Amino acid sequence: MVVLKTAAEIAIMRQSGRIVATVLAEMRERVKPGVTTLELDELAEQIIRQHGATPSFKGKEHSDPGAQRFPASICASINEEIVHGIPSASRRLKEGDIIAIDVGAYYNGYHGDSAITLPVGRVTQEAMDLMRVTQECLVAAIAVARNGNRAGDIGAAIQQTAEPQGFSVVREYTSHGVGHELHEGFSLLNYGTVGHGMVLRPGLTIAIEPMINAGKYGTKVKKDKWTVVTIDGKLSAHFEHTIAITEGDAEILTKLD
Ligand code: MG
Ligand code: MG
Image (cartoon, rainbow, N blue to C red; front, top):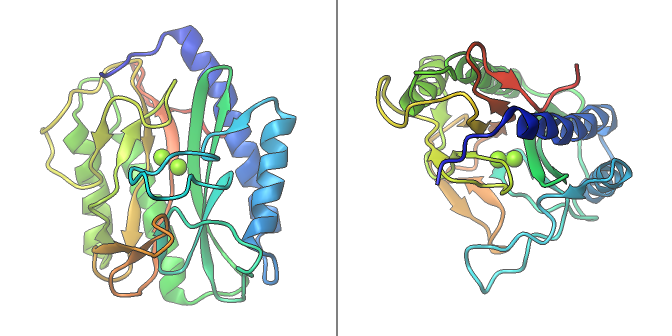
């Protein structure tokens, strides 16, 4: 079911979003060669709990009942890992890596969900281009996330930003409604056709999250059943914001003033 939020609900989501943004701002400072993804995770959890929130991802069930629940507060996905990387004491960042960090915080009944991809020290020009283009995809998507536009406009904006610059859009994972539930009501493809799909209305809250690959768009899942990697081992980047559709420009909820 598609849920439209009231102004009061969006005010709470602004708070959960701000907590997520605070965590990601700290991650920007901490990501450097030698840091483990578990250290980043522990710090993220600490910040989330200091704000009176709980980590949205920790303990999340897998669609496969045989898989472990997600054990951490962030997803940390390095290089060819696209999303859902599990933080580990044995994953130490090294110069030249790129790392996607995805954070969710649940506060006062509502989730905020946001991700960024960061360079570890100096990275290749291709990696820089991939991160820039993925961020451009998110900006383009948010620009068309407007009252009366359609879901397909968002997918098309992402696809038409990524593909002409030589990158591909991940198909098997999507953007999604967000609110009381982390994944709420609907999925929204990150590729598509202008004028198709669900009509966007004020009060819709959406986590828009393009995942963009340097090579082919195909994916596979590692043995841990969580970590999604590119089919060809090439780099992937991920940026995400939780936004609210309004009468005018979309409001980004996962940001610091
Ligand atoms: Mg996320
Ligand atoms: Mg999400």
